[in-house]
Image 1 (tube, rainbow over the protein chains, first blue to last red):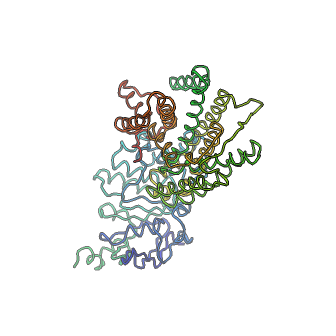
Image 2 (cartoon, chains in turn brown, red):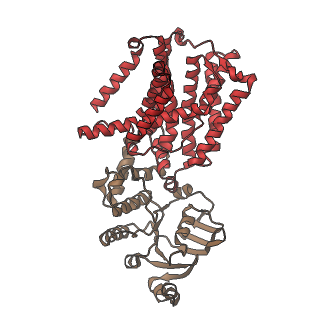
Image 3 (cartoon, helix red, strand yellow):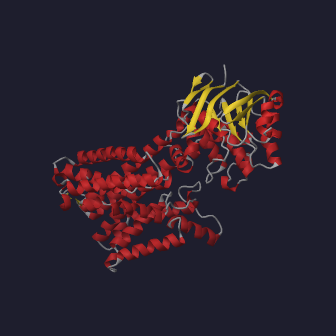
Length: 245
Length: 329
């Protein structure tokens, strides 16, 4: 079975065809890198997979379950988690509360108006554990607004991992990070167990190439080249897209 | 923590003993009115402060409960039946308000709630057969639970205080619950909340229903206190008042809307005896608050205390950064 199977996915904004028949198949446990020039439709593809946008046509299947017609929240419950290119967190809350909200999203407890959230010790311990996984355990009670950009990126990843997703979408996880921070985040991602399939958009080839099992190159809203690292690097179309030859 | 407990205890004693330390029946009645408007302001601030949704139509819900009560009592229903019907009709009205206005957020939400509130005002004004139009409806009987006549101002005040205390307690449990955290999440990052698996629309709808319930309770108490209801109760100014109370006192806190309600009602009912242009005094007060404490009186005072004494005074009742929040425009 395929972890993520995309067939003939299309999306237009008015006359602008941003996604023009994307086909993509990601195996369970795979680390897939998606590259492509600006405007190739990479983030739109993520938005279509996660449900932030509805596709005009085509299918998206998560471990065989068709999800293209489902709202984003249902896709989260089916095991899809994502991070955003522009960090999207709760800046007024502590790191712990951020991760707690992530855990709460998949818990029936989220509808409960009668108990105190800060007394839900099991949930909070789980959130602390998730922060520990990204090396932020000792900063758990600090407000997010007082953390660095690199730390926020790790909080985002902690939130995504806390949900124990089956497929994790990472939209430029290294963007805006310093060299040291990149190394930290790369080490963190390398430790993610293979039960979690990862699809990543990234421009930083140094870190990303090492991480990826397979690479898909997008151009003008379609997947142009698809293969192992060596295949993609050797493919003349990759050179054409990136070097314009 | 102990200082905060002591302050809450002191406030509780002062509130319970209010009929003993204010001069007369009129002042006791003003006390009841402050409590009623505090419930109303909390109702509106549940949406403003915790959901990030500014409603300018809540007087429609407040008066829907009030009118239903007055009409039912006029038609000869018993007190419990009339109160139950008033709550039920107001909740049904709230569901309609919420379903229509939650199609959007921001300015769109404000405009739809405003329009819905104006429809309620129009009905109160024009549906003369039911509402008496401009003349309004008089209600002659206050309830007498356990044989205690609430016609006595101090009795009515204490009964209102019991309802108020229950509402504040429930409100506090609500905003500190997992659902309250979900609601604040939809205020700050609705898109992220959806991606995390939350049903943002349903969370907002549920909060609107709770808000409508509080507005209805306030509306019912209002009619029993005034023994009268007329179209101005449903007017736009009546919807704007709790919004001003919440924002001036401190939106997103529990004490804030209560303090805001006390401020407005005191100026309206007490200062107006000495100053004929009390509206100007109220306006001036709002300007001063906005200039020096844009986050509202309660969080603003906390901030000044913190700066003055260095040490952290008791955190506002709702923590997690709401105090730093800028009030909505």
